[in-house]
Length: 442
Ligand SMILES: Cc1ncc(COP(=O)(O)O)c(C=O)c1O
Image 1 (spheres, rainbow, N blue to C red):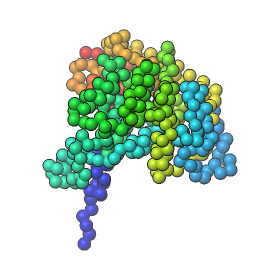
Image 2: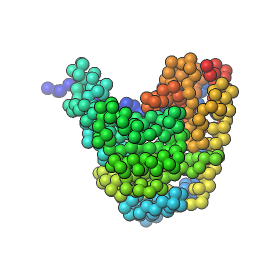
Image 3: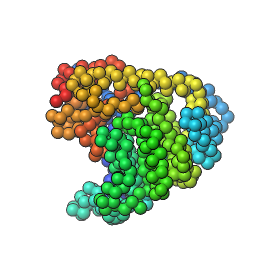
Image 4: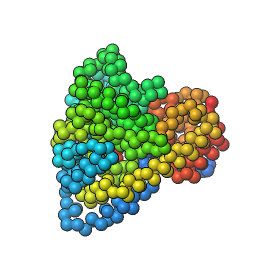
């Protein structure tokens, strides 16, 4: 007799709690609406995803082409990355931040920093399921597809993450069986909350500070563009050292700044950081190389070592030709020049949109508009009930695709994010359409 087939019942308890990644959900909705939007001359302008649209540097493309016939280039690399790549990373860290990292023990290649972060979290979390998960409640109520592991939320390993923050952190932590605890970033704390106060809040909510395994910081921040002072970074290093908490610095946007913004620091610049911190870097945004999937982790050698051990069971490193081209661009004048020009472009695009939103009635002069990343984080007009409703209307009526603030955490309510990488013409069109369709402040 054949058993009744239910593939979903085979999923792990952790995976059952996963939500479809917000950017893909938005894309699906955009695709669904496209015919109707085109018919009313409102073809979608997608300002949702944070992916530069211009070509990568010519230099890196040529470097890739030139090495494709080299002996051995097509065979397996090693998870750690080829030594020429790790040495180029060390040279880059020295030149850009004045930081020394040992290419042998303190650097590890990544298949993009998203992958590296996910595996770092897995290295820290003892998998447990929170009995308060919605799906679990559903299971308990209905008796269907129940979870086998039930743990009070207070017993879970905790990783503290910026909120608003990169949408992947929370899901990556959840699927590893941990608890993502929000570090609220807002106007009141100037996006740099006091960690001691936050730890007290965590304790007052019934969680144990001893369960906090790591703190994630991300300056410049996605989605806010917020940067940090050097004093604040130093205070977090000290805080983590005092409490034996791993400090995970996500530096994906460290090269994206403009105007009078001081160059963002690496966490490894601060005294004692190497005792407690690991930093994640990416070639995706600064060189418009999102599809290449190339990044690195560097810093504390125990953290690098355990990340490498786990990764070695999962992947076998990045295509050697990509590592070679990446190594060349990281230490080249051409790469630095490309980043400079791209940042000037983003500054111009930010000015176009800031001016446009001012015309639409947003109080731009009293908002914090950071000069970093390629995102614009703006408040939702008060007549809308929430950010989801505003973004849905904006897409349905005007074909302008933005991300609701809550996609980046609960503290994102009341705001939306625009990725300003589109062509200038499209940015002007966004403002024009919003004017015509009545998306004005109020
Ligand atoms: C803050 C932040 N970290 C990490 C990543 C991942 O970048 P990648 O995996 O392309 O290196 C992103 C991508 O949007 C991001 O915004």
